[in-house]
Image 1 (cartoon, rainbow, N blue to C red):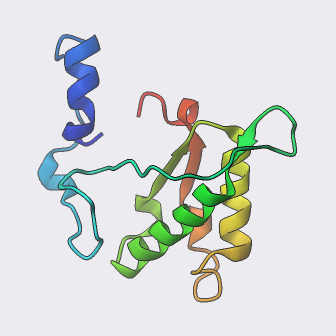
Image 2 (cartoon, rainbow, N blue to C red; image 1 turned 45 degrees about the vertical axis):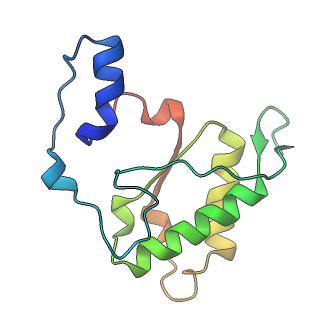
Length: 130
């Protein structure tokens, strides 16, 4: 994990003992993508409506899925490989919706339909510990 991402949990919960498999130099920010800050990740606040997913036990947000597509499109244009992109969502319903949305409606689908298949899209639990 990027050292900037481990700083808070390492110092808050683990007395600074968490170790990273990479350095900041290994994960330089691509200047071709309009990052909102000089950090390896960012949070984007969107005002969409949550809906109950088809399973009836989870949620999805269509506005967020559209925003994910736009961000992935800009990352691809900046030369980021799909295997370098990870999308984290708190809900399994949202994960399923994003996967379906990108494959059917994604801006890159017509140019490179396999691009989305290599992006890891998982719930928070799926990314835990990595």
